[in-house]
Image 1 (cartoon, rainbow, N blue to C red):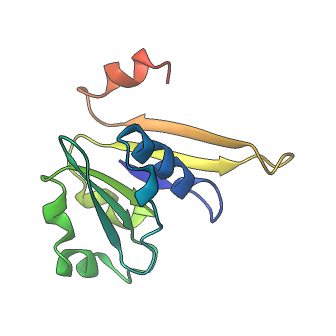
Image 2 (cartoon, rainbow, N blue to C red):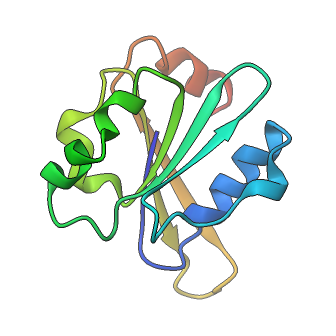
Length: 125
């Protein structure tokens, strides 16, 4: 899945919540300076990317980023740069702030995957 939104819109907080589902809540930190943090859940790998500082897609390829897609769940902050190379089955989450209340966030969730659409529909998205 990849997450889009302005600074402070909740992308890393969302990832914290996602990792807490896998009992990894104590391991969260923003990978801004390391590009990717790797987490081992009980039955899957979870990779948390922050590609904000990448100059271009070639840098992502240079770190072996594409290889992660087949090896676990990838959460990618600032994923606009990578949208054209993402696998067919992904979820896109666009975060936005409320203009009236700084504590409110809106999440717009999309998928291009026929396999994932029923899952999003089931949770009323």
